[in-house]
Amino acid sequence: MSSRLSRGRDSWENGKLFRENHPQCTRLGLNPDLPVLTSLVQHKSSALDHAATEAGTFQMLMTTICGFIQMYYPCGMYKPTSRLVRPPGFYRHMMLVGCTRFTTVILGLVALNYVAVSFTETIKSSAPLFTVLISRYLLGEATGLYVNLSLIPVMGGLALCSANELSFDARGFVAAMATNLTEW
Image (cartoon, rainbow, N blue to C red; front, side, top):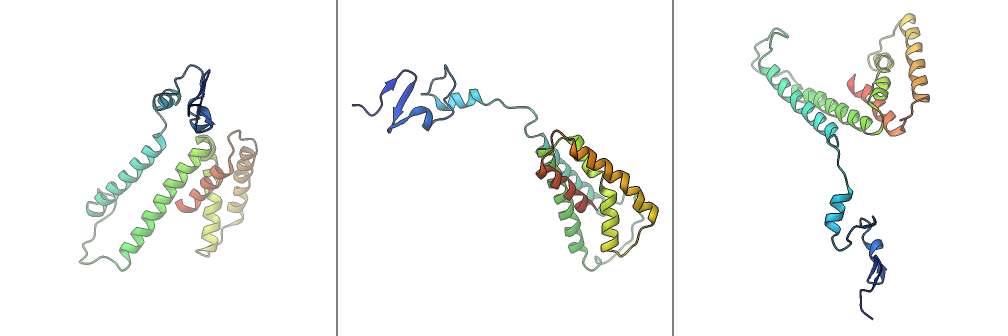
């Protein structure tokens, strides 16, 4: 008995069916002797497959370039002051700002990977709540009654949208909510 027996479209390799060893060769009419070509034929690719990654990369690159230009050429945004040395902790603070911006972009891309763009933006509309909470607990600032009352319709709308969203995914929801923390 040979090591490879042929039985119709199924063939045996090392005691197992060829289809079990090569799952990409399961469509009718494909030649199982050309697994590389069949996998190229089977997997269609969209032009927008990597659009979010490219957009995030471009956003980070432009943020870095524009920040560098603005550091040395204020472009009318503020009045430049001449300094002999950088303020204490300058590089540490810039690294903190850069890392939080990077985290915001990554979390936004993760959110877009799991939920629709409209739902991501709806979730990010809860930013006023995070602003009030962070200013209260980090800065010790108390907000007025009317500001707190104005948060009720915003949070109620967010709850209604989240409850009825067809593309709801907990991972995307958490990532979009986390962008509110890192954007503050």
